[in-house]
Amino acid sequence: MGASDRAARGGSASGAWWALLDAQARRVRVVGIAVPLATAALVAIAGSCWALAAGPASAALAMLGIMPFYAAAAGMCAAAVFTGDTLVELHASTPMEFRTVQTMRAAVLLVAAAVGGFALFASLHLAGAIYGDAGWVGALSPAGGAALMVLVAYAAALSGSTRATTLVVMLVWLFFALIWDPNTASMPALQRGLPLLVLLAVGACAWHALGSPERVWRKLGGAR
Image (cartoon, rainbow, N blue to C red):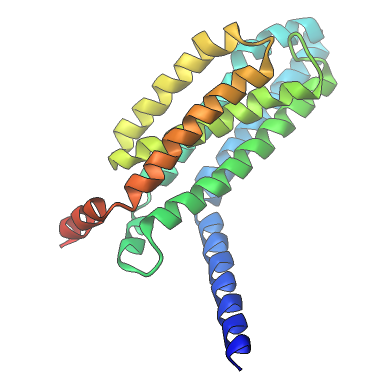
């Protein structure tokens, strides 16, 4: 009987987690999922049409400047999701922590960002509109770039300010678009691998800080 009770409780807990994940995916589906994916689709359509009209070489050069805007869109939408939704604050007074909700939203946005990036690359790759195309490994650039911006927004959202989070996302995006990516374009693993390691460490620190007793106390005090 005890074993069956534990199994039932485990199944109930698992169901609660999946229900919460589904609820968060539904909550962020417009800003966090639909807008970045629509941006990826628009960039892909623009690149494909450019390749048909002016040739793949011309389209590839144009996409060098246009493709990074997908990562910017993913980051800006993530900033809005993490700081612009007051309903997420309600979870601070429930058994499900605010940190848990934010992290689940981050997971949903990361998956959407990666899917959009791979779809964008696939479209441009097939159209021959990728500059210096090195094959499918090049998908790490748009997919990884968007995922990095989501991680930046997750960490920056610790400030609790939409304006500050957006500013940090834009500054980091400018660094990648203007400095880092152009100088590491021939090394896609390094281009995305090193920043990913750094931002995962920063994200882990943000995750820890989100659950700190001091921060929870401040949030509850502010709510009163």
